[in-house]
Length: 294
Image (cartoon, rainbow, N blue to C red; front, side):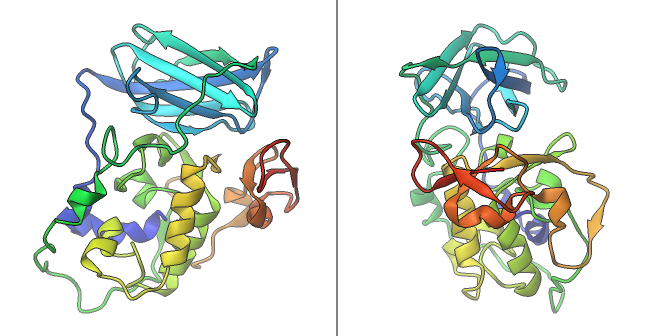
């Protein structure tokens, strides 16, 4: 769900996607979730305001209990985290530092706490997302000069992760914090499958002009399942983060397993066990249809 979006870099319509209605300087924040001073992997974390708890992003912690948010404003924000029946929430006014170097914010989960991030990462009508009802009324983009044929089998960067060309192209309804940045990429089972699908189907869903393929019907019906799967896994917080060399290219059309697989402790859908680095996963307590990579 990343590289094949690079075709959309030539399409202005695909850049009409992210708007952050919040004044002030933007920077990075690293949130670490702990329980009894021990890092918690797979916890859901969001940063936002009282009105919208995930206005500035939502994601899950990695094996070290960390989640990085790249577009946090310099004003007051609320950080919320939860895992199973434990939650926590803190208000930062202002955050300790807002800069390209992510400061650490530690939040400790408490049993029985009611604090929870929203069920979906970003509401499509507010915050960083896009109102799809409005998108449906956008007229088809004017034809642009394109090569006679688009060859999908070309070298790709960050192949398998979220965000075109290592996060350089925004995606509708996907918070910026879910994309690649600073040498790290977010990955899920759907983004993995979508990149491989678009390699073989240049005119597949979201393989040319991004999410607007679904609005202007500029796709051949391929890759719809992988695209929907990517959004489903993102919406449920079933993603993981990997350090990626943005200069490395992939000319095979197959995601490099050892570089993109889900580390131990990652929460995945029960059907996605094969994406674990160990290729094995165990049931997640009190979370139906979700497993944890061994």
